[in-house]
Image 1 (cartoon, rainbow, N blue to C red):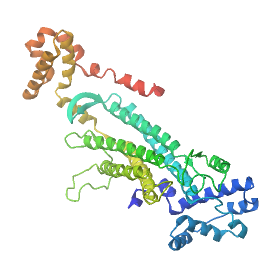
Image 2: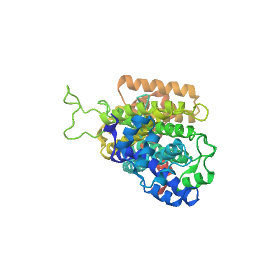
Image 3: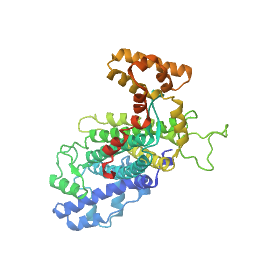
Image 4: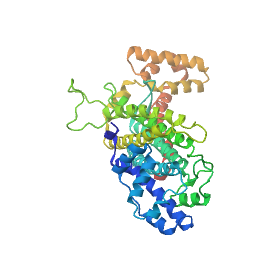
Length: 434
């Protein structure tokens, strides 16, 4: 059930009556503008501005009408005391003048909620990155020891990705901040474009340049696409944390509460269930791009094939992404960093991470790359077979001694030299704190 993933903010945004509250806001704004422009009597506009609805009544009326907007309007009519005002409710409008304009308002509010949480997450990760800027750990490619990095640098990568996603969401917010008050097929046959312009200005929305009965659905597909990229970014981060929590690595651990249980059968387990949950939800979220893309292609000036799935896609994406963001905040605020294990895994690498440096040094001495590569590979494999330090092996090798003195090896083959440019990367990314 989606309810288990509702945060406090999203619970408010997607409560059942909220949709009708947005609809009512649009109806009232239209009436207000029409009253000021003399299109409907001012006193009727004032009455409509006082209008309300009953959620339970709408539900009962929809059973009869089979049309939610008509049920909504009937409920408002029942709450209007002035009979004349009832004649000017929804004056000249079509359903999706209200629905799509309200969608823009609701989605924009939801995006802001997510962006605010992402900014908080980004700040937490930035502070951790600075704290662990110099904490050396093994870098891995294909799951195999590669060269050392720092834990701060790994976090800095997460920071940058979150920052890019915030920028994308800001663009997406602009992309969907369009409404329409243009009538049945977008030609203003019962309206004036000036009404649309003023109504949307008051709602802080932009006018859809060419609308049909609806706002074009490529706008919403763009938003859902950005949401799925964000979900995939979260999956990357969660996957990295749970990989580093593996028993044989054990460099990170997600939070594990005092009374939490891991396995019903094995009491010793501390499983990375939060990160695994994030991965699971990200997989679901990515699937929601397909209906959003298919909604772009509707018959003629519109059909209803988009409507039902949007009532699931829009809330589900926003609810789940905010839930995941809040879980990420919790994880990074309580992340366990096992520095001893990081050091232990560096030692396990037996200094093989100097192989690329050795290759470069030999090439500088004039050796052909292919010859130098084969030599370094042979010595690397020998170190692994003998379970000896790579530096120990190369210092004993007669071929290496022909080209490199021991003091040269000492100069270059140290972690300080290997990681000498990490601070430059931090400086490039975090200029404001340098």
